[in-house]
Amino acid sequence: MNASLTKIADQRYTLSGELSFESVPALSSSILPILQEHAALDISLDQVVRSDSAGVAMLVEWLRLAKKQNKSLRFLDIPEQMLSIVRVSGLDSILPLSRT
Image (cartoon, rainbow, N blue to C red; front, side, top):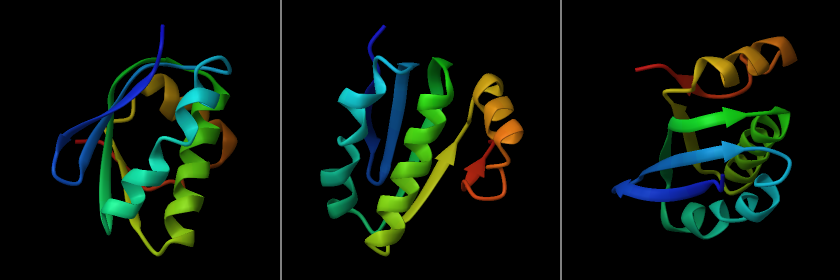
């Protein structure tokens, strides 16, 4: 299953599909033009059906790119499976996560 990043409202996007070692490389650079458009950005993860560590690594990379451009980035509705990877990796204190 492919992954995609889709605009759902001003400054709000949804990430959907499967985030894996196969899908992440094609998706990872899609954040660059979006970051240039917005000072703050929310990305909902509630449509992510499965993720491995590559998906979590992509979120860390997106956060790094946002900070480099002095942009605000927040991840919403992270699925429990991804949250487990984040916690085991010790990234829950780094990633801006919000469970609404």
